[in-house]
Length: 324
Ligand code: ACO
Image (tube, rainbow, N blue to C red; front, side, top):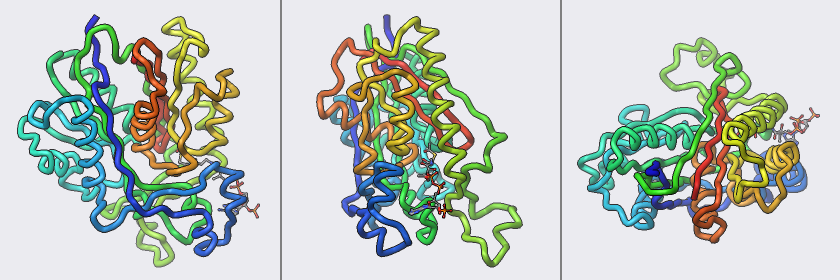
């Protein structure tokens, strides 16, 4: 059976490493607090020649090379991001121009930390409609420009980076099923205003502007429950047990969310991929960066089942099952 499959992966992380020790000099916090509450030890911060679309393009080039696909073969480019280079044109259009992917149409997708999963699902649906189509799906963020560096509640959590996948038709492997959900009524627990907003709060001289605002405890509770629920829905639909899954790659928000999720699902630690200690929360980029690392570390084998799951602002959440 022909399905939409990941043909190649790539990622790109900025060079600059920001450690917890450096954060201790910036806000009232400690390495011990950050490590115990989040598992994060460092994150990457983009420099002047590491704009969102530049990280995205570098990740894309690596994914194209791994897939053995040329930019000219691409029919569609999707960039999942909440920190685009500009509001218009889209980051995806910048990437299209950089790659010289003349036959591709391109757009950005905003589903916060679930953006890459949503993008992969959109790609899969295009490929079902046109089995010869090749789609580039990228998750790319420069969140360091979108956090309030005086707010210790949020600035310790986030980092920059990009991950990419080339998706195309393949025989006997690929995306089996997915389950995507949203709940816009909970928007105010995690949000970031836009510079063009009509929000009167932004006119307040004390406003911090367009930075990430978060109710950490609430987000934690919803994230764990929602991801457990959406993974269970998918497993039930496919009549699988968690033990049938070779590798689970959850959105890398923080280690306590991942540990809680693993415990609730009854997964063993070896089943859960985790690199949040190195990169922090890179929102839409976290799953494709983790996927690329898992591939390069040899954690995925043909015939194994891969499960992706995410939760983010919106709220948005979802799960996806693949035959690798
Ligand atoms: N360093 C030291 N102390 C801190 C820091 C810090 N960086 N940040 C907060 N504190 C303090 C608080 O001010 C508070 O002090 P108080 O008791 O004197 O008021 C105390 O620590 C406890 O604060 P809480 O917010 O209750 O701490 P909590 O145990 O909930 O941990 C955290 C905070 C890590 C943010 C947690 O709520 C969490 O992980 N939430 C999930 C958030 C998340 O992952 N968001 C990412 C986007 S959504 C997603 O990707 C899924």
